[in-house]
Length: 462
Image (cartoon, rainbow, N blue to C red; front, top):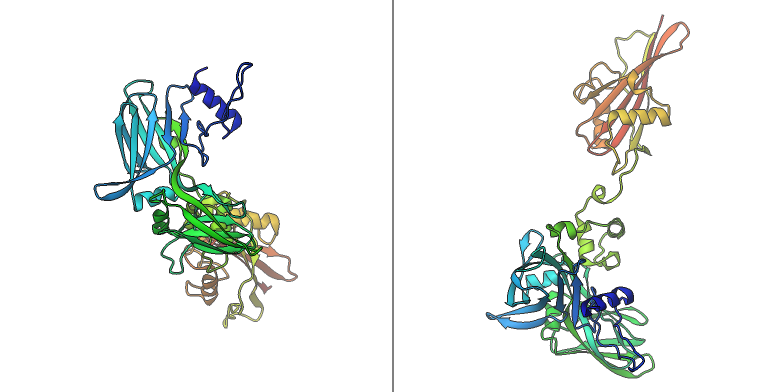
């Protein structure tokens, strides 16, 4: 078995553990640093990805290095392929990003400038790289690279535990001008924790009895990782009274790598949409909340900040939820001074409903009337009436005398105005020595999703 396939088999079967072997004549092989994994652990020096047929393989040094080029500080990440490279190009969806260059027959590098480019990558956006080769089939394939700040080289007692991950989270500042925060964690049963370094010192805050958060905005996290040779010192005043120190270095690592020979990398790695759980968490927070780290990563939350509920949540079947028509109730139609004493009419009542915020199928006046007829029997079947719009609803009905009718104005104010889908019907009801009729009206306001159901009556003696 080729070494490459052996390493891959080990990675698939053992996850992130290294592979060793023994024979009758050999002592057990001591596991070496972890390699050949698609998600790099803190101790991995390289991260590998393999095209399923074995035609292409790709690896990156996990540790990014900072250099000064053209008087600018840049992060350099270096990759190696098993094919001779003709060209490389780095990009994010719809935009070139970073600078990728071939540096030898099978080696290339990607350079990210300090500032916008580096901050964008550390915030969780994947970097895509197209790789063109002289040999193999196909001769173009793509890589997806994930970068993140990570602690390593821990030195100190077990009474302080500095977590490896420093994750991008969504935490607004009080001015509302910035939301990206980089957050680490330290566990220690201590009365206090301080962090010292030449620069790049995080803000430390207590979470509970033995947990502390480490928070950086971008300028400080860049100072902490560049140069990565200078450690941060963590000093804890333990509950026992002892004072202990631990040091750790914060670096930029390639933590994820994938490979694809698909012609369209956007199909292979589509931009994630806002997830329902994140959306619900974000919108359940009380007004004035600044810290949304409990809802997901920075980019997961960011995707939901401007998403509409109907883009995220599953469609709901049509339902009508009763809502109160606000007092004071609109005035009943005034009596007709010219009407004979034996003629009568009046308004029986108004019911108001709301439709689902995200209906599974379009809501129309017909579906609303059908639903009311089937569930409440308070209106006639849709086919027994006439559908119209705002312009036609003030003609030949017993509810509104004109477009300026005070009852219609009160309903508009409640329902939000705008277009109206309307339906009106009537039926004769039994009456001894008289004629009596019931009138029904249903108004649906598409802009607000509100429904108004009206009922009136009129009649006259023989």
